[in-house]
Image (cartoon, rainbow, N blue to C red; front, side, top):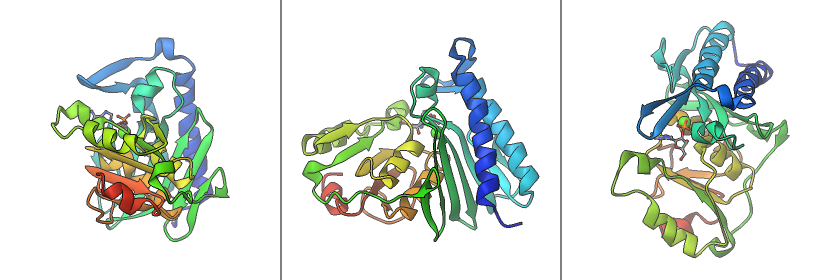
Amino acid sequence: MPISLITLENVIREAGAIALTHFKNLKHLEITKKSPRDLVTEADVAVEAFLQQALAEHYPQYGFWGEESGHSASQTQRWIVDPIDGTHSFTRGQYFWGISVALEIDGELVFGAVYAPALNDYYSAKKGEGAWKNGEPIKVSNESNLGDAMISTGFACLRSYLKDNNLQRFCRIAEVTTGQRRFGSAAVDLCLVADGQVDAFWEQELNLYDVAAGALIALEAGATVTDFQGNEGVFPKQILATNGKILSQILALM
Ligand code: 2AM
Ligand code: CA
């Protein structure tokens, strides 16, 4: 059965409702540490279990890869799911976190949705057909001067204790831009590029489930998605999404 954007939106919004019930009751949220700086909550586990079951029910032909449960069934045609991207923000009652669902067929991203329930923003994209926010088409900003740009980044790499930890790169770019933000969810960050709310976002040492849906949404909204050398593609270990107009200026500082 071909995918239905309406069915998928209903399923993903239902997953968001599950997450919101936990978000509104944080005092009782069970939080554990996967590693010293990596949290998982009962909400992450519940949302992923719901999505895995609901997606298999509607689309039994596709396999599944989720952040919390790993791989199951076909991995050549699979859902790639991050149940809550921005878990740390979620546990603190902050609003920038999202449910990220992508469909990848033979290595190509063909569908992506990021739902940010606390903001009530549902972003989606279908390969070749465009990107939408709450049903309205979206596109990247027109800013062409890095000096006037609003940029966003994240520091997932700090958790890996790497020497190349983004701090120097951030300082270089922050010094020459007008606005700098750090939202804490790569999935949502990529949607903000797609929606023209920020002009560029980059981060290192992520996983495909953090960025798959958001990258397709950004691309379909007209963004460039590259590594830090400017090679086009979705590279979670080095991802740079821009409106295209400031790409060469920002690459020079990466
Ligand atoms: P998460 O909330 O699903 O874990 C924010 O900088 C980004 O880093 C988010 O997309 C977040 O995803 C991710 N992140 C959080 N902990 C991480 C870890 N230990 N390793 C890699 N990425 C992580
Ligand atoms: Ca994540």
